[in-house]
Length: 119
Image 1 (tube, helix red, strand yellow):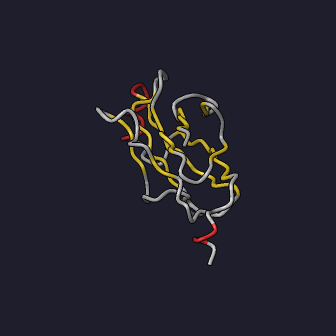
Image 2: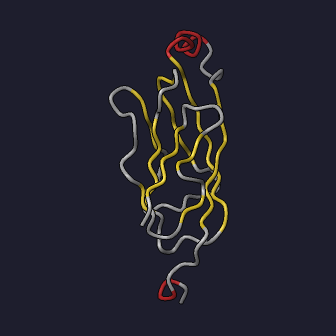
Image 3: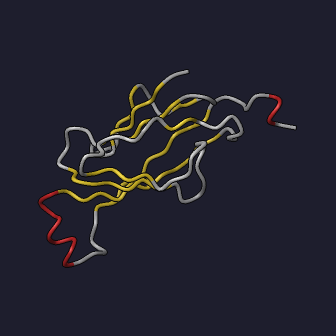
């Protein structure tokens, strides 16, 4: 099992060691060293994780608990959206709540599910 760390505060979003995951791997979303004060991560078409989102970061929560790639997740891409707010723009966001920064990312499930889940 591997752990993949995704920094959603970076532009562009960074993946360590990469964006490919396998069944049983763990993924952690984090607010790295960027100026982002908060972030919400959503999977609009469906998630490959055993726990559902959205996942929120900010305040004292700078990273998600490890999210496990489900053994029943199908191979292929899982796209996600990140809505961020940084401290300097926070007042503007309150005045104009629809003006937030948005980023897109994705992870790729590269292994087939275990055979017992395909029946």
